[in-house]
Image 1 (cartoon, rainbow, N blue to C red):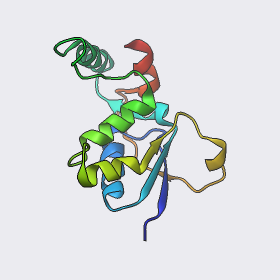
Image 2 (spheres, rainbow, N blue to C red; image 1 turned 45 degrees about the vertical axis):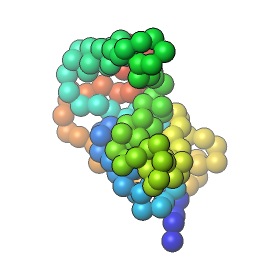
Image 3 (cartoon, helix red, strand yellow; image 1 turned 135 degrees about the horizontal axis):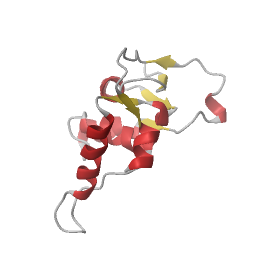
Amino acid sequence: MAEKIIINAEGAVFGRLCSFAAKKALEGNEIIIVNSEKAIITGNKPDTIQRYIALRASGGHSQKRPRYTKIPYYMIKRGIRGMLPDHRGGIGKQALSKIRCYDGVPEEFKDKKMNSIEGTSTSKYITLKELSERI
């Protein structure tokens, strides 16, 4: 009963997109997210940029600190991973293996029906592409 769900992330709020994808992956569906660089994070741009710069700079030893990537589709995958119960083993690991994220739309998904997550009506936001260029 597992199905393949293709989600267009254009204009989708980052947290809502990640929680929707995590929930559907835990149900056993295969999730494909396209246009990852066009997902948005709501809030004040300078504050969001500073928060991500601080996340990338924080951590302990240079070998052991958490790695926060600049690549938009990895940002989404990490956001989804944070919403899974246990990404290192068990059902969380199985669910994470069923999720694929892409920047842009690959040729194999161009003609497929895509779901979209409702956007927001706020004017204060930053796209993942813009965020990745500034951090």
